[in-house]
Image (tube, rainbow, N blue to C red; front, top):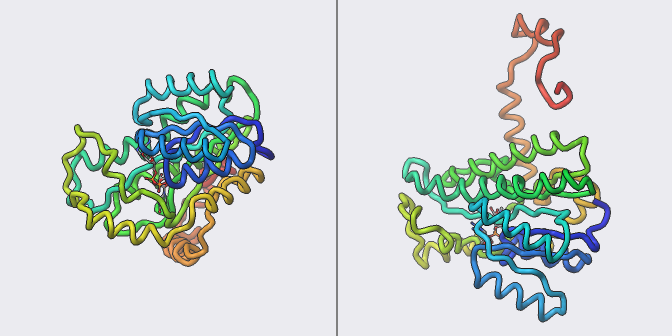
Length: 293
Ligand SMILES: NC(=O)c1ccc[n+]([C@@H]2O[C@H](COP(=O)([O-])OP(=O)(O)OC[C@H]3O[C@@H](n4cnc5c(N)ncnc54)[C@H](O)[C@@H]3O)[C@@H](O)[C@H]2O)c1
């Protein structure tokens, strides 16, 4: 998408952090923006900020795990701002702890928001985009956890690796359409993600992890506070969109871990000379990558 000016964007989690940075960058670039968030206080604060700049945005209270509510939000935004050409699936939550301590509710909540939230966004807006046939862009925010697993955050990592798989396939599925796809994988960003538990629904409250004491929050905030400023991160996103670039991986500190993972995987991949059936499969067209599909 060469220019976002005059186009309409729907940004989930837009009341805070990474998504708010995206909304600010989009508004600055001349887009019409709707911010959707489950936290009314985040929406109010963000809306007041935009209004004070003289660049109001549309605020929508939405729990992205609720597919029916998502469709209603989409209707309301398209009625007021026109067809949505840019979908930013950015809202997400994290609650860390070892997998062996996780309850079913720990899994459910993070999968609901981090994975089904993205699925619901795509399920709601993609049919509308494809039906109209104009230039559109879907930006999914995953994380460097989509590539690099660390101990103590297995559920979060599983959801982000799922968003990566979904995004990579979607990018291939839509290649022949006018809808482009990008996947943002941030490292640390200076946001309010340490407050994720505030949005955890009561019916999924049962947790095997720490309870979110002020000390726990402060510990997480220390890590987040050395992260990238959200609006700067959003700058990379707009640049990538202008180039129709799929991967948005702006953190140099992940070069070495990614190379290490690649080397570890390659060291374990079978070699043609060790597999007597390889030549036969290769002759018939091995389904080994996108070029074979
Ligand atoms: N902060 C980081 O260091 C970091 C690193 C990598 C990836 N990310 C990803 O960035 C994205 C945004 O996170 P952030 O760091 O800006 O956090 P944040 O908490 O500052 O912002 C997330 C926003 O999403 C909203 N939200 C939560 N659940 C929701 C729901 N069910 N429906 C609608 N809105 C909901 C929250 O109210 C909040 O306003 C997430 O997907 C996160 O995984 C963040």
